[in-house]
Length: 281
Ligand SMILES: [Zn+2]
Image (cartoon, rainbow, N blue to C red):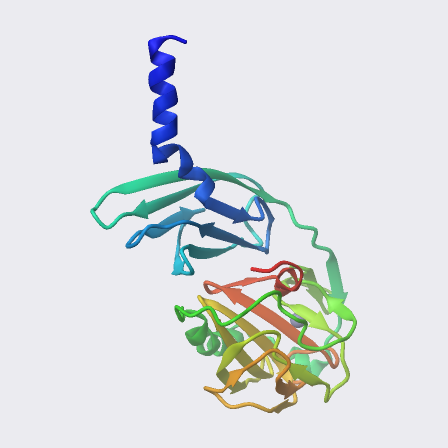
């Protein structure tokens, strides 16, 4: 063993620099368009905080037990490929550590689905109306409560057949009509819609385009959305637990038949809620 090797090995044994990288867990490492990626930085020392950047956006990190977590939604339109993830750990004394990782964004599978709307429903598809109503809903989607209310995987808010998955390329009355930014469950009008996890009701609205709408805030910039409802069974400000009744499903707003449109928002980006029923985030 020469002198250089000895120095290198002792550095390896004493220096924490070599251990910085394995403090980070990324779930999943290969993430599809429209899905969520969770980043956890573990074993943080007192006063250390994390910041990060990915695909040109800042990642907010929130305090957990001995760790900090950040959630990143992958836009449906993001080109598949390898992207750098930059993380910085700021220490109390002003020192910083940087961690660079590579994340692969994979192409999602999104079918084209055609459906028909009756003239009375089709009339509601005005850009102006949709934008105005969405601006109202969005006010609660930009909120990042620093409390993680959810525990474990999410449950589906109703039991029923899937009628349209997230990200579908929609054709309405024969014309292209953008992407489907939710998960549809075909249930008869009047089906009880329950909370998929713990959260706080932050929005109730009788909207023309989205129909009767509820938003539940689960904390850390994560919300779930419920469209086309027939009846509200909660009030704004109410804290709900998994399984608590939120509403009755319906067919209000731009809807081609009775169903629940279940949406999810991470950091004000609509992502696939079905992933959160399969993986604990
Ligand atoms: Zn839908």
